[in-house]
Image 1 (cartoon, rainbow, N blue to C red):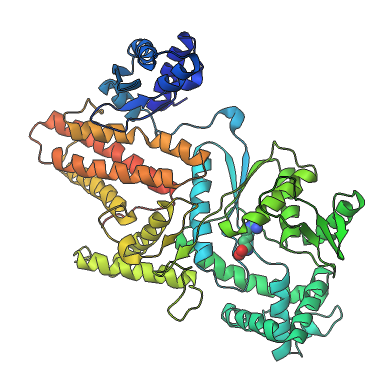
Image 2 (cartoon, rainbow, N blue to C red):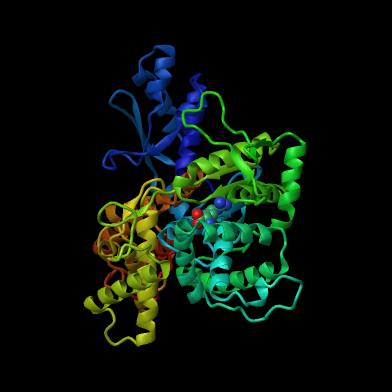
Length: 584
Ligand code: ARG
């Protein structure tokens, strides 16, 4: 089993603390804050000393003496009040880079079936920037969890049930009351959808506005929602058409983003079981009546925020967002899930808190881990949620087009499109544009919002996706050039200069970044690693010529390092859902 260098050093330090009579947890090792001083450091001597009122330097010296004997360590010294500074042996760096992909799998006992619930678009509504974040972060978390050895199921959890559908039916009925769907009876319904996705995208905002102004219309929409949910055949047929045309568009949108799902389930998937579920909750006393509705009381003593009851059935009998989420949670539990990760706007925090509490109250055991991986908003230059120039919601497909165009402009500016065939340039622009948007999103802490600034995202310099892509492409072209010259890579060797050593050290840290990313559901850990590794590649590129190196043996060793660097950076970008173009 692969173990990262940092983990091996942590094991050595923990062992040393234990031998000195202290708790093992003092042995945690992290990257040294001052890379000129050492590669890694352990700060455990200070808290350990406090627990026994001893001098921390003394304890650090004892631990350091033991750690210095570890085969991965070239030197281990005490600094300042009791920091333990560790330098690793070059041979250990070489060993790490020669050892597979550089990412450890999770412990067997911790691996399980993980549902990642992300994307979450609603039928009949164009996806907007909020769904962009869910899709990008969810796709990345799915890949991170997967590489750690979990069985991961990505589920789009379509918004395809409930009030919005009733609104659409009411709107359509208003303009075409004669459609067979509205005439009652079991009749035969058209096989072709009565509307296109473009119609729906116009109809939905209209219906939503109408229901705010016209109480009769609102009531009709409510009635149709309830009728659909209790199985009206005409409305069911119409609903199926609405879902069908929507899914087609959504699939195309997701494909252009490079986002794929294992399950296209949605709020409607368990629709037939919802009323039975509510009856059961009511009979068992887990849910109670409240103002005509059926609710689960989730508030607890000591809550700092008031949690409203979790409504599972409205007074008119209709199911809602909460009902479908609870039913879906039970279904995932039954499928053997050990964890469910919901990648949804942080503003839905209370909903998920109430959902999770409802699950526990109704008997879902703690062995099923539930996480709301909430995220901040994508903002405009004014710091408010991103809108179009006209003030409308920014459609995801328009955003993708903008990113592609901006990337194209940059490629042309940089002379990178000269002489290439237009189809290829289009493909590269798409890859770079999407990569830019994804990297900008994922290099931000998940919980924070950020300003959508395409000019910055698409820049080839700085902490951007195109910069990292460019470094990977450059490594690829060096490898190609070397191959054309007949230069072959040898095994990785000890570094011949500081830039090489820094690069090796940086590459050996991919696994730690992935582990941290899994632990906090935080892809930015991987994005940060990609950025640092790319910078190290930039320095290596300047300090360590390959095709122009006279010493053929040295050139072959550098070539081997270039290949590992490319492999790990491509892999890191892959965990972010970012592809690397063939050229740039
Ligand atoms: N459709 C919802 C929305 O657009 C997001 C769904 C999130 N997933 C969930 N299981 N509730 O806000």
